[in-house]
Image 1: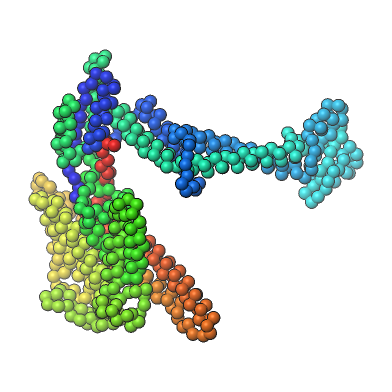
Image 2 (image 1 turned 135 degrees about the horizontal axis):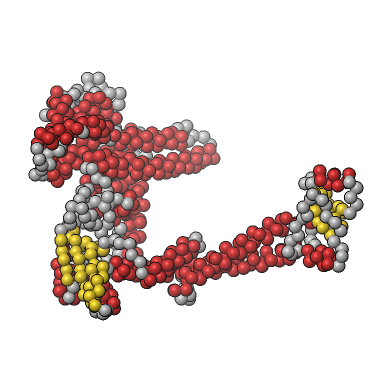
Length: 630
């Protein structure tokens, strides 16, 4: 459930800034007010943000290094980030210098080892030697000119290297002399490489201090939170040494009593109001231990319901468990996942004394998969006839074999008249029927929630009309896709339901006839929404299709592994068994990964888009309640 919020304003009347900070510390210790976000700045806040930025950057760098076991670190905590950033900056400078040296060495390497300073000394004494790198064409032109002042040092396919004595060559650019000889450049590059190695060694040692930086970041986070709250206080000076400060935010209804007591004890003025229509309070979702299992998935998706939207945790959990089971579809997969999750849970229990909700959620999902797979006789896609008798007894025949469709029991026969011609695969027909029925149940559930929320407004009747229309659309889908005879009432349900919606959708006060006119003015969008609802029901067939695809992939790998038998010589049998194990491990492992992706794409989509988005009109526009506290 979404916990109701109150808008609270705390007024602090203090004679000194130090007193204000002490009161602010008491409010933080209380830990019940979600402070309204404001754009603020202060010297202390800027300093803390700068420290945090440096610490995060340093931590990101150190995370690329492995931490030694049982490592100790003697570096003072406050020096680690600064030292890491200093080393990284020095490393960057050295790498740039090294790159330049390597480029320079590569440029002069063909000239061999010579001293640029010796050429300069000769030039000062009157002997001018100018080096050139000429193309073969330029050199040929020079030969034609019979220029005897050019001395050739080397020739190759790329051109000619030589020295012009006295005067330069007209039209040609001399070779740029390096600052140092090749040997000196090599020496510099070696020293840089040694220093880079030392820096890497220092960073590797500092990597053992990652936990200290993480602890520092937690402290800085609280400091930033406190300084943000302090800078965000609305202060009014009543005199040179006395001011009044206002702190505004949101607090859950059940914590208002504690806030009132703290206000009385500390001399604060407190104002408590209900949220106005235009207000957007934070969202605090609180559920029992079972329903809370779905919270890690919401955290992973980053979805928070708006304060005035629905908490669909319970229904989301129920349907997601079913969707997960139907998409994975195989009891053996469920058993593998449960085994892994169980081991992880035991490990967490030993280390922390409790099992995370995420681990519990995967445990529940794997159990649901085992149940669904057992009812379908799906164990690594092994044919039903090859399963042990005990597993065969768990199977519902209608889901696994070609048992002909039988009439629905009792009064259901009047609603669902099976096709006159038996489908090619009755088991597939049954699972598809189940998919569409699950769609109706979930989407009707959505409109029941809408009706409950809108009562006693007449607009609730419009939602009831849409619900009736959904039932009619459900039977239309069964008729079109599963050849179930369309009941006479189905089309009436669609027409009456849609008509009821048009009459009551805008009945929010004022002239009823004018409101009906407003509703019919939106005829085209409403009609398209009705078509979309029809498509939403059909969309649930993806549960059958994805599950069938996974089964087909598993069967294909099974055939590849053991399709030709394992007969032959001893060596041949051993090799065939080894190859079969590899194929099965790879094939079923790949299938599990693909099924996991399918759960994210399809299982999550049905809950977030078809159910919550299209039929509950949820925008997930909320933000989480995070109280100012320690």
